Image (tube, rainbow, N blue to C red; front, side, top):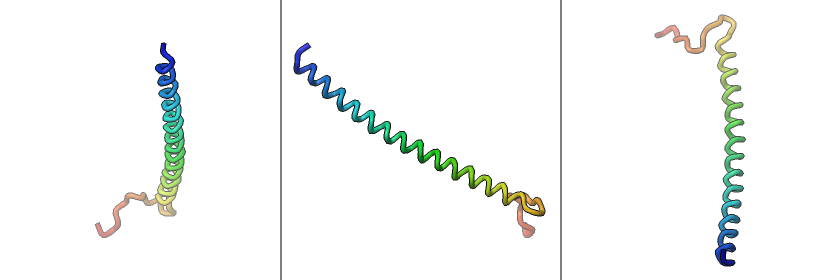
Length: 67
């Protein structure tokens, strides 16, 4: 293998490593965002369930009396 071809392969490998590291950082940030959104969603569901379990045990999706 020629020296020039070997250098080209090294350069390509370096660029691929950099791209892989950048993609890994993006995926890591996205997973953190997904985890945070799941926690917020779970908290909202709990609040919604708590609203449905009022003193008179009325359901959240119950229609108002004027319907």
